[in-house]
Length: 319
Ligand SMILES: Nc1ncnc2c1ncn2[C@@H]1O[C@H](COP(=O)(O)OP(=O)(O)OP(=O)(O)O)[C@@H](O)[C@H]1O
Ligand SMILES: [Mg+2]
Image (cartoon, rainbow, N blue to C red; front, side, top):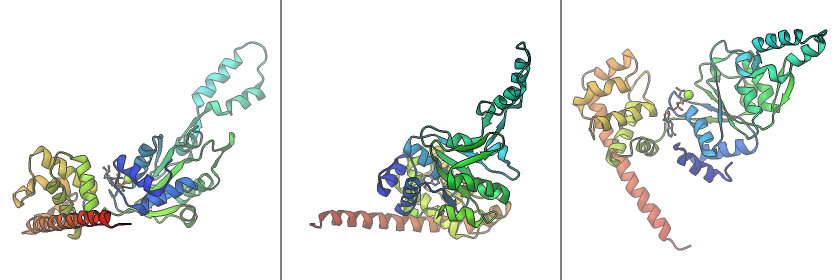
């Protein structure tokens, strides 16, 4: 566990996740006072990756519950192993003498016959883990209500097995793409963060981490391209992962800068619906996006220079 928000920010960065001090502070505080973090924001903005990076940064295990429509408590919490129970009953009935059925019934309702799902596994860890409840907006209200007990008093009430108290309280992250509005009780119990697409400077840093051999100018150009594409009217504006794909493609194809003639190569990486493909194929559309990307890249370079000059000047000011 990190000792401060700035240590959390640096820890996340060394785990490959670039964010700001506001996010790092919320993550730090949620960890210290045992609150879940609810992350909402556009697809590909880095919600899932934040939870994964926290686990990497702390060097702890990550338990993940991938939500989907129709998910039930058995999948999330666990269920009795019927086969094992039947086998045990069979063995006990063959041990000679009259079997003590009441005793056998008690035994097969015990913890050793129960196969834990990710929620139970998370609270039974000796060492605190990260629990990622991914895409919570896909579940119904009943399932969401079931989570409230876990996320407020850190227990799970399981029929027959009883109430299981947390051995360690997990660091919980819930993510949502806002397909359905989450209930207020869950929101109230959580720290709420909106994960947006990064600013150009951070986007360049993320891309640089993935393609360290490419030049600074290429990283800036890709960050400029992201900005330019997101300003264009697209059904599915590209996220960081598409921009990372563009960077890797440029490295493989030995291209430092995307030119209008690269349209057919780049399109499958950035246009993910037929509508967006058509929009980008419209006359001059791709050309103007590429032109704007170049302008944004120049601006990022200027800001980088003035930012580092200010940092140097700042260091020279006597205290
Ligand atoms: N801040 C960041 N620092 C480094 N890499 C990032 C960051 N944000 C996103 N990424 C990269 O973008 C990819 C997509 O992020 P992620 O899967 O977390 O998005 P998401 O918000 O969970 O999207 P979805 O809503 O589609 O599940 C990650 O695999 C990671 O490589
Ligand atoms: Mg995700």
